[in-house]
Image (cartoon, rainbow over all chains, first blue to last red; front, top):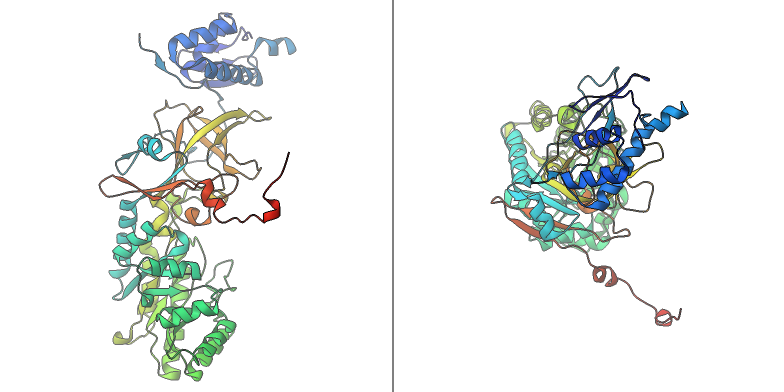
Length: 85
Length: 452
């Protein structure tokens, strides 16, 4: 999944979507994932990156990562949403 | 390099606009110990879910209530409401503090006797007392609180075979200005039923009318209603004195004082809305003291408060089974405890806190129990840190009614431990086992075997 290009991301976890005016707050690990998505990393790379940084097992990362992607989509932050619009 | 502590990735939409002027309630401060006993250690030793009782809180709450009433009124006697929590160790803490027993069934009556409570210090309430139970209560000089005329006539009949005068009170129901009025128990004050019962008791001269009892409701947030009830009971006691020359020895104001739980639908939390015990004490004692009793005839004030004394002493520790996403995008958390053991989740929005450290990020979630039933909802909406499978939570203020109204449904009931004043945990009720359930079942011979 790719994230919309025009999304503004602050280092403190504040996300702004200029096309809808919506703003969001993410926790540090959520921010990490969004930054990686913005750099167009693949899902596998992102999961590996998370596993390297955090003390957690692969199954949990897998589960939480895909749930987070669903939430990005639901909040209209994915590039797929952009196409649909 | 040491790895960072993991937390589930979260995204929360920021909404602007009107909101609760007090802000949203968020419970992210972890509750890691109960009176010095570590939550993690308790769960490791006794399993999950687990009920934990704080002996210190029981004693503190009792001493506070005792002070509130005894500093306002000369004769006060508490009787522990068994139905609120009748685990023997819990009852014994109250008995050590000086509480008598207040029971509402033969089962509870025998439980109190078994714990060593003298029969004369047991108040026997409730509409269902069998002939055998009434006989036992009469023999033991227990205080029998008569609920209906059938019970009264049964006692009159029993006095012909038992050569002992029963000690009785009648339960009186009345309009105290609150809704709903509990008129299904006892005899009504306003329409004269109470007087019918009193006249019958006094004129048959087979038993001693020693007290008057009322119990106006449950989770009563208006202490003034108790003031009205105490005034009406006092008026009745004085009228009996005037009419028959008999002194009523005690007025039993029952229970129903609210705990610090938050009722469902309540705008403010229970911590902010529940009156202090002093407000109830002030309303009740002022009414009795101003009623016009002679000093030497002031009735003893009996109190059967249960919830207000035990609720905050109870905790339920539980574990996250899973997180899932509902069809509308809401987060759902499934716990290993549900309404089967947390019956009060039907009435309250229980305070739930994590049992381990998290960051300050939170999310809204529906909290479900593990039962295969749609009604198994612990909290319809709770704001908690992003918990993952295996994380622990502490449910607060669960000491009242859960350990008596819990159901053995689908799974077995958990253990209960009491943390003593030194922070040591004692097992006071074992986790149920399959053999506990099997022990009560019988198998007809022709059903013993089958082939599949």
